[in-house]
Length: 293
Image (cartoon, rainbow, N blue to C red; front, side, top):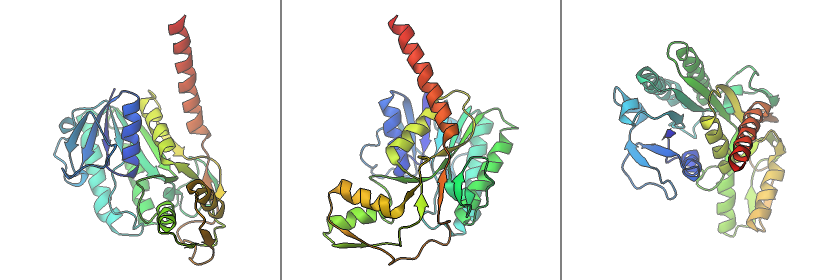
């Protein structure tokens, strides 16, 4: 299986490339420039391609892969920027439409939990979307466009709503990176919100494993939450990170406001994704048993 990855040099893209490589899959990594690539982002081949200014036939230019894992998205982390709707969305639609028209048969796209907006509690894939950020709205509109496009062109589409991911290589503005930096500087306290909000966090390497599992799963189409399914308070999460880092820093709670763009408590329901993964593992075990017989 030949898999192309857009956004290959990004935070999640690096982990996805690593996971694909560990499975021995042929990978085509798309990058916007020829500048030095981040470490540990080896791929079978690299293609310089900017989604915003791709050729008329990007699918052929990337080598006509069997599947495309589409992670590229610009304008972050400014979630309320008009860039998402005015620039990013039309460019994404044009790029992916060209790929589908040229013969792409499997498309896996990174969505976001921001599509759910301010809905609280456990969020299932069937929960109505009510985005309250420009980013979430643009992603939601792209999803609807792609599922309509699937009616015109024959391709499998998996839309993966990523919840909160963390790991090395993340944005310097993420709480994970800011905490690590504060510990490295030897600071005694770490300013944060009250820490009472409940969120759904998943290590980036685990998210990459799930993304690749779905990509390899023939016929796995639809919307999937990529999450842990387990809510945790930000306070408890940060404390667990401090313990894992071996730091002595103390949380300085209540110093930052809560985000107006997120409800106080929400997490993903992941039974749909788990069922696909369990089925894949079961089939693999059967094959291994038959091969050893």
